[in-house]
Length: 133
Image (cartoon, rainbow, N blue to C red; front, side):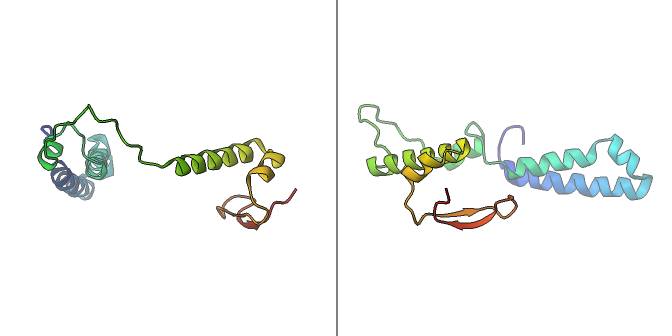
């Protein structure tokens, strides 16, 4: 794992091994010894490492990506078109108006038949249709 070769697989195997060791310590000597030795936290750290995406400096990343020479003479193309940039700016302005509780600006930015889908855990959660002023 230190070198970064087969990181995900070795971290997953280490997590399983450490967890089994922690269970064995818990059964054999009690939970206090497993907690004192931080075996459960080491197991969790190994599982977290297995869940992370690969670092670009690891051997795994070097193994998976072919080396390409980057041509700096050509300007980079934008991933988004001008229309998409304009749409993104409108959406961000809508979010800003909602955060500021600016009903007038929200009415200017949205169509009268707008439909908001709010997370149900919020006090105003659910679906709201139209602009209520």
